[in-house]
Length: 149
Image (cartoon, rainbow, N blue to C red; front, side, top):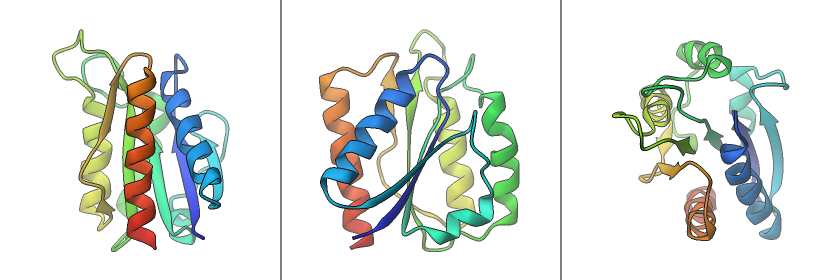
């Protein structure tokens, strides 16, 4: 089974709910999972290379901006070659703003520019994830599993 990393930032707990659902699904499928938060855990971009696949979650701040706790990671991604590394990006946002989920797109674009093999879907949830959103997180996670197996 794969060795997977989940990293996420969550201000209101919405992205954390998504990360928890993703982690539970991976564990149910007998994968090894390391879960870290941008708020509390040291994250070295070089460590991304140690995993078979990576799932990164972020909320979107204001009108499409990265949250401050993700900014350093975003900049440090310029220093790592992720060629061929399967990655999925997910998060919560607020459809009130003109740029819905902009931080998710910014992060996905940066990862792709570093050679990561992104899942076609980017999971964007409007505020609190509902049951259907959690189901979509599981389907999204299965796509990453399929890429690493």
